[in-house]
Image 1 (tube, rainbow, N blue to C red):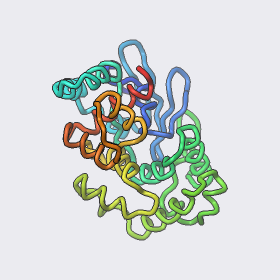
Image 2 (image 1 turned 180 degrees about the vertical axis):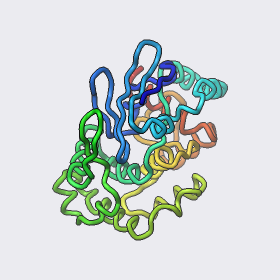
Image 3 (image 1 turned 90 degrees about the vertical axis):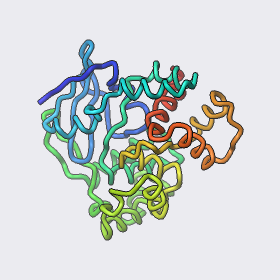
Image 4 (image 1 turned 135 degrees about the vertical axis):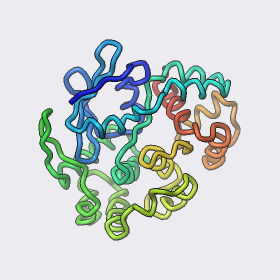
Length: 273
């Protein structure tokens, strides 16, 4: 099945290249996207972005298509911040994804102090090694492994796949989730969720914020990395050096729209749009 959406507020390249997802690849006229044990083909056709998948309901929600991003852009502009107004115009094709929670926990543990090509490679090898092979009209692929599958291996396994010092973080987190599940995290506020995520080995403030935003839909989260620090100094005239305080500055300023604003600013800055 397939569905389409106004490409003005759904640009596949912008959505996939803004640092919130690591399992996608060029395919035909667009991209093939993987989430947990599902996949889709997304591409632009004139003024529309088209999504084809056997799991159309899943990916309609995944791409957050029930939400009107023209209203979000309008509200973001109401803050009357020059850098944000510019970013909203240049990156308005970005959408925040509603991704699989466990996959995001492991993906962003792997992402710390890492670059995107390497992150994608590590995750791909983990999926090939431990994920279930799935049928698809676009060709077979490997699902993201369950926590039980991930917990079945020791740190050395992940080190051999290129995870480096993150090997024990993956193994320990998998064992904890296998034992506890994550249902206790699902209905927490942003602040409560972040506090709980910080009790997992290998999850610091930035990784926790990414998991909150991209995995649990906490739109009031605002991840701070080197690009955001640079933007804070150059475009907001900021003088703070502590990332926790920079995070507080932005979340206090943008409130419930913090996550959207972060993605517009981050993508526009990193891409030199």
